[in-house]
Image (cartoon, rainbow, N blue to C red):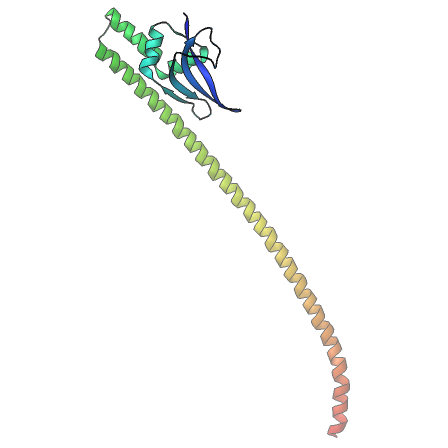
Length: 189
């Protein structure tokens, strides 16, 4: 029986979530499988992989053939590197402790690289948010300036209207006061 290491789809439409499984090569994608060795979620950034490393290494060493995507996942997780290093131990190139030391150094270097990428992404996100905030402040200032101009124009129009009413009232008031003043003047004589 030829075994494959493949992805089995799950999740909802438009949000795929995969299980990494060991299955017969003739089985359909979402059909029967022998063992589930991990999960793969491509929807996160970076993609999230949860893998039972020892079982994956066992199956790779026993000859299970991975699909292209699973091969990339296993390679990124270091399964193929460990297989290669264990081959060196079998040939006598170095011992088990050196093998583990090399693998740990590779894993630490990889983790450092991932942290650097995450830090750069966080910085880019922070810079974008700051730029967006500055742009929004600028737009708010422009809107506030336009509103202030409208209010000033409305106040000026209101002041002109009040001045016109006052002038009209002043023009009417002296005309009414003049006959009253004339009427008072003869009484005073």
